Length: 202
Image 1 (cartoon, rainbow, N blue to C red):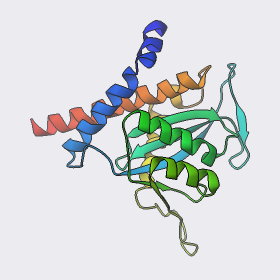
Image 2: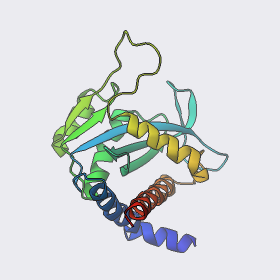
Image 3: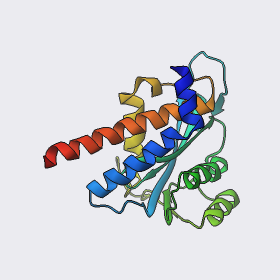
């Protein structure tokens, strides 16, 4: 099983399947196959006892890894990069956009929160020709206030970490294996979304 797992990654199968399914599901839902808007965010996750990279996210007080994820406006993963939790979001942003470009995605704009600012973010955005639109909550707002579009990536993180046991914590020995776990879970979500639409239309 591990042999096939590694072979699929080396051959780019996970990425190819996800790309085809994302375009198909977006068309089903009346959206253009190629997303013009993407959403960027990260999720810090506690590591298990296994060997491998880890660091401490000082803001969230989490020791483990950080999942840097880019999704389309429907919340489906376009690219993911796993680093130690102490890696700053803007440092990894360029790597995520690079990974998305390798998969054939070329969004026009990227929605992100206030941490995605500064020289590194500007350089990454310029390299890929994207406009970074920073969303912030109103200072006077009380209680939970979902941000336009950005709530979808929060829902994606919640779905990945609650419905897929492999992602409840960081259990992998390498970033590559952790990224594969995200890709496999995303492919499962896409297959379910595609099947639900087919069932409703039949």
